[in-house]
Length: 89
Image (cartoon, rainbow, N blue to C red; front, side, top):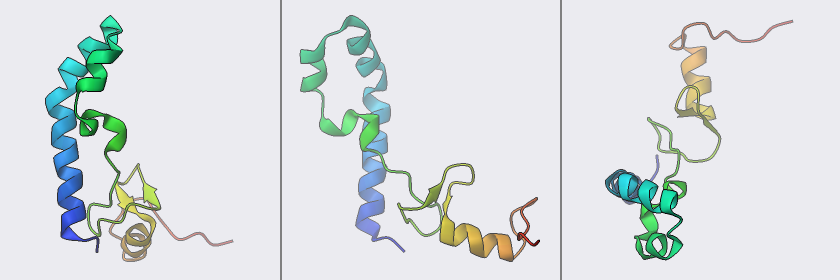
């Protein structure tokens, strides 16, 4: 499990991105890069990290399912993900 502070920091970044999304889009459309530079750093969507919904892990994140590979494997083996079966040949 990721530290609670990391999860909260990521949530704050996501809220800042949402707050400045409209202003940021307007500035980009105008080509006002000086105005963009004056926005907070966390207003950039690139700074938000994809994290597993259950464990908070950021590496080995599977976008389609929104979870990490470790959580995905456990859930798939327990039959919690419909349509996913263990490969056998």
